[in-house]
Length: 317
Image 1 (cartoon, rainbow, N blue to C red):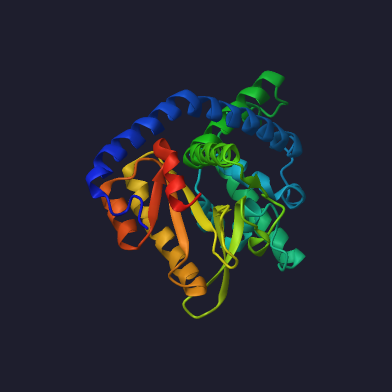
Image 2: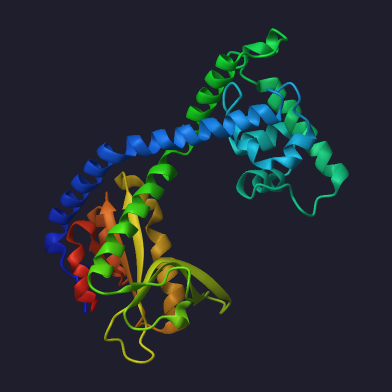
């Protein structure tokens, strides 16, 4: 039974209410979240400066021991350079930079000699572009003061957080959405089994957050689909599929239109595995316009607005 996808007459009001809810949250909590991330980033940059002798001792060994500092190094140049720009300027393989920044490691299959050559190329390019206005001790060939180190760390941390601002806010909002769902479910006697069960272990009245659900790709290849919330209603019969919920938030209308095909792809893989009876819905807060809603409705994907969370009950919970 459809809950919201077949009621376009109330979409306009729901969109306005959802935008207001998101904006209210953003003004109250996003600045605090960003400040906390900046404090953490400042500490990380200070570690990076210490590991590299305040940039006076940046060698392949430091990058091999602490690959993740490459992101901070990119934010230490004038101007800060994107990942792809560094790859092109330094003439190194994308796998090197991707492994270092995304997996905090050097490529495991790259031989040591080649690795060190590529790291020297990265260091040479970073050295050419370092922002000496942030690190004045380099041109003046002296050691930095504690105040200069802290000032430099805060500037680079601001750049780091600026580059990651959207994910920082989106992750904080998603965590808040799951907290709201957790409260709603536990208030109604559901048991949180997050981290304790797989899909097949769920029993009626249980739920789990961030669970991998098996699906099938078009070529029948198995694929694990990350789902934010998996809930098996209390009155579920043997073999009944749980409700799968994807928490979605957005701070502008543009990004939602770019991301709307993600859900269609997921639900297609789930239907190929479990049939058309799979129950996959969205939990929405923020900027989702009628174009987005119409696209999801056409794919047979229903949703619950956070400002009307009690609609979850209409899915049998």
